Each structure stands twice: as structure tokens, then as C-alpha cells.
Amino acid sequence: MIESKNKYNFSHIYGPVPSRRLGFSLGIDIIPFKTCSFDCIYCQLGPTIKKTIKRRKYFPSSEILSQIKKVLNSGQRIDYITFSGSGEPTLNSAIGTLVREIKKITPVPVVVLTNSSLFTLKSLRKALKPSDLVIPSLDAATQEIFVKINRPHPSLKIKKIIEGLKEFRREFKGTIWLEIMLVKGVNDSPPHIKKLIKAISEINPDKIQLNTVIRPPAEKFALALNSKELKRIKNILGEKCEIIAEFAKKKQVPPSEDLEEAIFSLIQRRPVTLTDISSSLGKHKNEIIKYLNFLLKEGKVKLVVHKGLRYYEPL
Ligand code: SF4
Image (cartoon, rainbow, N blue to C red; front, side, top):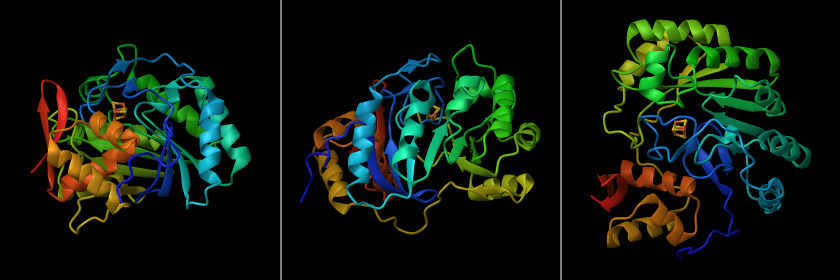
């Protein structure tokens, strides 16, 4: 049967969705859709709607916490509670309170995925201290490449962000996996990789995770490296480095075939955007995106950009 509504009617929570890195991950979204300090050329969620560095308490923490509690009590398997979502989660000034409160109610490890832009702020670094795992990203080691790939808020400087990451490493007792998104011809040149290596060795993360543009990007010119090119860079980065880009060879199995079918049947009727699918099915956009990626990989649907909007159509 096709579900027409999210089981809990949640707006801040999606999943748990299976993820290769984090097992069954319960996604927590505490930011309005595409509110971010960056507008990355590879962003799978499309162009940034609100580019800002101003931290705000976007939603009542009590509302988010009560939703998390309900899912925790439902008995579903949850390996990680992950702050990621539809924009930059550290823009929510309540993130520290939320992490602390979650730690009081469950032993499930808490992860924060972040673009690192606000690590320059001592208050944010302190707020993230109770997390178990932080996955910051760093795609550029020079301001020129930073602007090209991440199209940041004009006040942001990569040198200061790298300093912030180094400070965070000194202060944070948990685990840090540094993610690098490589885009062909943009940040993968040998001289730039050399500069990245210098920055990474100073930051000293527990792991370095290499990714490339596997999912449909905001900009068509954001191209993926092939697996040979990624392996070459992985070897340069050494044993702490792993490739997380999934070059799917075998058929992927979606977590819920019912939901995959519901999405596919909507797409078969007419071209639909991510927002259309999310509101029709009452599911969070980030959950829908995972299924759309399955359908794209399986070659069942295609992504078409029309008048700046991204539509999914049958192939
Ligand atoms: S990839 Fe992340 S950091 Fe970049 S624009 Fe998208 S949400 Fe923001």
C-alpha cells in the first residue's frame, strides 16, 4: 500500500534512512529549505534560496525534541541521530541545546554534518562539543577555489575557516571525519590537492572522506571525477583517507519499495519537482531525495531543468 502521510507527520525528522557511512540514520532538519552560508555548485538540493551567516533559532527546540522522543520510543533501529537536512544546520543557534538534550535522553550517538563555515565562532565550537561525531567539509584551500566551488557568503574567508577547524580539533574530544567533495577541473588539480593536504594535516581529522558529484548537482558544469582519479588522490592523502562516493555497479535496493513506487508513479503522471513530491506524499524532502537517487541510478527517471526549476520525469 502507498503511504500518503508521514507516519508521525514530522516536519523536522526523516528516516531512519540507511546510509553506508552511518547505518540507520535518523535525520534531524532544523533549518528552512536551502538556507545556507554556501551555494555549492554541486549541491544536490539545487540553488541556495537564502544565503546567510546569521544564526537564528528557527524553530522551537521543544517541538524538535518531542518529535525525536516519539521516534526513539517507536522501537525502530537507529544507529545515529544526524543533524544535516536542507541547509547548514549550524545556522540554527539552538543546535548546542538540542545536542545536549538528545544526549540526556538516549545513548544513540549524535552526528553533525556541517559545511564548516561557522567554525570561526567559539560559541559554535563549544556548542558542538557534546556531539559524538562531527563531519565537517572542506573543498578548498585557497579563496579563489573556495569562491568557485562553494560560492560562499561574501564575508567568509577560507583561511579563517581552516583556522576554526584547527581550533575545533584541539577543543573537541569526539571523532572528526573531514569530507572533501572533488569536482573535476575545479578543485582537483595537483597544486590544489597539495594545498589541501597541508590544511588537512594541520586540522588532523580522524578520517578523510573523499566524495565526488554522483548525485544531480545544482550546476550542470559540476562534473564528477572517475573512480581511477579518486583513487589516485586517495593514495596521495594516505591511509586515513577513504572514498565514500558510491559508483553503483550492482542494483541498489531502496529502503522502502512502497515509497519508491509512490514516487515513481507520481513522476509517471507528470513532471514533478522535489517540493511537489514531498507535499503530495507528506514526506520530508531529504527522505524523498534518497529515493530519487535510487530511481536516477536505476535509469528509471531523469532530471530536467526548466526555467530554473528542477523536474523529475520518466526516462
Ligand atoms: S552542499 Fe551543503 S553547504 Fe553546499 S549549498 Fe548545499 S546545503 Fe549548503
